[in-house]
Length: 84
Figure 1 (spheres, helix red, strand yellow):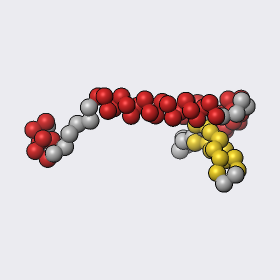
Figure 2 (cartoon, rainbow, N blue to C red; figure 1 turned 90 degrees about the vertical axis):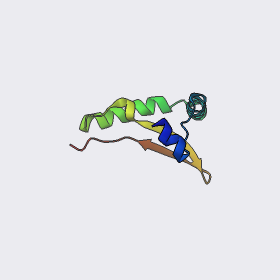
Figure 3 (cartoon, helix red, strand yellow; figure 1 turned 180 degrees about the vertical axis):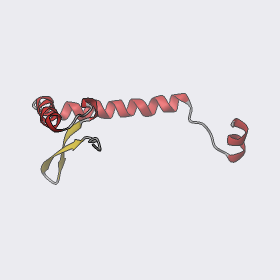
Figure 4 (cartoon, rainbow, N blue to C red; figure 1 turned 120 degrees about the vertical axis):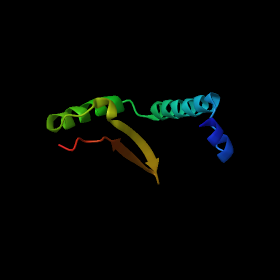
């Protein structure tokens, strides 16, 4: 495939580039957690308990954050629920 990639002008992303992208994602995640209020981890646990009463979920899949938009704080919760 390397010859085909070379002929088509496609280059693989070098490992340094991949590592840089991953590091930027980690830094963005760390920065967002630093800005989050102290009550957010407890709120996350309580939300998981309530949702867990009704459906079985993977607790690592819940993402919760608070963002500011137009002078308002917005609570964003992302969780993929099982189909059944």
